[in-house]
Length: 103
Length: 155
Length: 308
Image: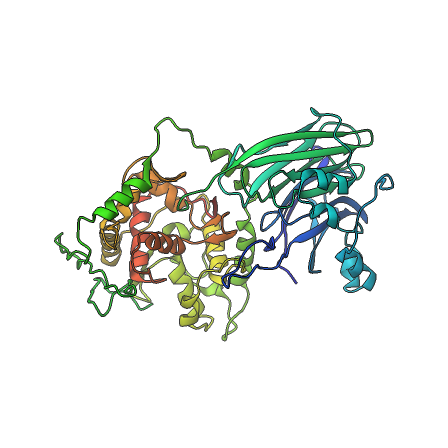
C-alpha cells in the first residue's frame, strides 16, 4: 500500500478548508530512465473526497500533475469532529484511502 | 450532479474495467465512480481536450480567476489556484497550451463545495495556462502566461 | 566513516574525504596549522580555461533586479511536499527496526538520548563516544548502526535516492530531525579543540582552489550578487548568506521532487567544481558543514524548505 497522505481539514468561517499532500511518483511516461528507456506512466488518475457518505469533491488528473500531488479545496456542511475520507486511484490500479477528523 | 448533458468518452477506461472486475472491492467501494476521461487527457491540443470534455466555447471571462506565479523556477512544480465567482459552478478544468497533453486536471463540485481549487502542475515550457469554469448556465475562461525558467546549479 | 582525527593527512594513495578521480591524482590539503604554499594541482594554479569558464558562468546580478522567484517559492512554502518525508522520518525514528529491532529513540543527537527538538540547530558537534565531530547525517548513520544493527557500508553506499525512487530512510530521517529544529537559533558549538579544528579544516577547504578548473567554493560563494544562469548564489562569507544557506537545508528540491540533504548539496557542488567525489559522511564533508554552521550563528532554522 502506498505511503499515507498528509491531510489537513480545518473548520474556518463555516466551511472546511482541506489541504492534501499525496505521496506518489507521478511518472509522466515521457521521462527516460538511467537505461535510456521511457519510464512507464504512473500517475494518480482519480481522487474522491467524501464526508458522511457523500462525495464532496471528485477529481480527475492527467500526467501533468506534479510529483507528490497537492490538492486544496473547501466545502460546507460539516462540523468539527466529523470524519473526512480521501481516496486516490492511479492509472495502474494502485489505491490509497486515508481518513481524518475535521479540526 | 447532472452529467446527462454531455457524453464522456471513456473508451478503454482502465478504471471501468477494474470496477467491473471488483478487485479490491472494499477500496473501490469508496473510489470515484466516474471513469477517467481518457480521450480528454490524451488530447494533444486545448481544442481537442475541450471537445472530449464536451465543453462548448467559453462564453464569458471575468467570473473565473487564475492565480499563478509569473515565473516558475522549475516547470516540474507550478502552483495554480482557480476561483470562480459565478453561482452554480459545477466543474473547473486546468489546461496547458504547450504541454504534450493539454488537459492537466478536472474538478467536479457538488452542491456545498466552493468553486475553488489549488494544485500543482507540470509545465513543459513557457506557456499559457487556461482554466475553464462550467456552471449550469454557461462556461467561463481565464488565461495567463507562465514563464518557465531553467535554473542554475540549485539553491 | 571512521572517527575523525584532528588532521587531514593526504598522500596520493589515500585521501581523507576525497578520492582520486579517474586518471587524476588526489588533491593534497594542508595539515592543520600549515599556511599557504600548498602543492598546486597538476593543471596549474592560474588555470586560464577555468578562469574563462568562471567568468562566463558567473554573471553579476543587477543590484536593482527583484527576486523573480520569490512569489513562486512563497506559493510552495506552505504545504511543502517535504512534509511527507518528515512524517515518514518520524515513523522511522519511532519504530523498532533493523537486525536488533530497536527504535532510534535512544539515539543521542547531542542534546541527550532521544532528544530531537533543537538538536539539528546545534550540529555538527563533538561526540565523546566516537571522539569526533559529526553532523546530523553521520550521527544518524552511527545510531542506525550501533542501536539498530544496520550495516554501515550499505547505508553509506546509497544514502541518496535516485530519480523516480522513493526517499531513502536517511533522507526521511534527516527531514524529520531538521523539522524538529524549525524556529531554533543556529548554534553550532565551538567548545572543544576538535570543534575548532573542524571549523579550521572546513574554512581551508572552502578557500582551496583545486580541480581542472581551479575552483574553490569561494569562487562561487565568496562574493555578492553572483549567479549561474538564473540561480542566485548566496555569498556564504556574509552572515546573511551563511544563515540563509544553513537554515534551509535539507530542502525539497522541486526539480528532483525529493528532499535533499546538506551532504547531498555539498557533494553536488563538489561535483560541479569538477573536484574528486566527496565521500558521504567523510570528515571533509562534516568540516564544511561545521564551517558554514559557525558562520551562520544566530540565524533561525527553517528546514526542510523548498528549493528549485
